Length: 282
Image (cartoon, rainbow, N blue to C red; front, side, top):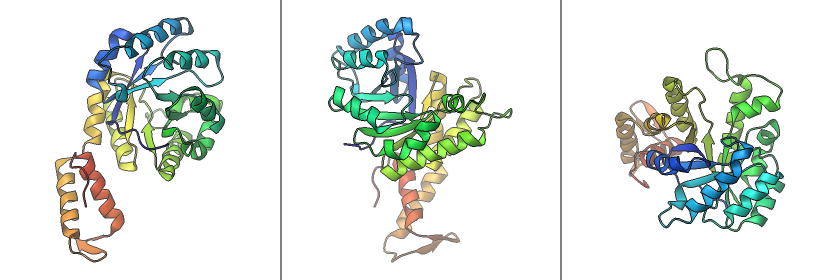
């Protein structure tokens, strides 16, 4: 199957045991991850599953904008999660602690038409990212910094200045490249410091420039920051238009404003215009 998510850039986590927040989260973000894993205590998961089932039975649920993060494959909670989801319309699932294609074989055998996001948040998951990205039901990869560091025996993914340590930067790049090589989407990790919106903006700007399709958010106040970062500036859009317009009638590479423009730079300009909502460009 594969393909792409086709969602906007700001994807907001919402605990699945808080159905009172479902609608608000969907109003504020481009898509919502209803979380049955870390966002819910073990004791709260039965109620969370019931809430998901009731939500899925509603007539006006925007199914295409709902992702469900289930419990890790191989756990009893995962089996219960999938059993409940089989009776709902939700088929875009996020699989935490993803580290083997066999996990996705089992998932595909349990739910028809599953679109999976592989969350590569352990050392094994990062190493397995190229294989996970090519599984037929995987449409996107996401990475996670904190669980990755735990899997390595470390204590912090960031330095004292707030920037990622080298091992986290490596994992981020490895997951992005694996997704790109397989022709699927990559989602950037959450920014856990909810008050540091400036750093979130900086990381989101780097994410879209590097090739991520979205950034996961933990709080609604992060959503507009991410959207602004992914939306190109007016001068960037105008420059992209000029590049595309100048390419008309050109045979091969050409010079514009002192720069040599060839196919990679044309492709980058097209990507800017798509982000600006100008659709497909020639």
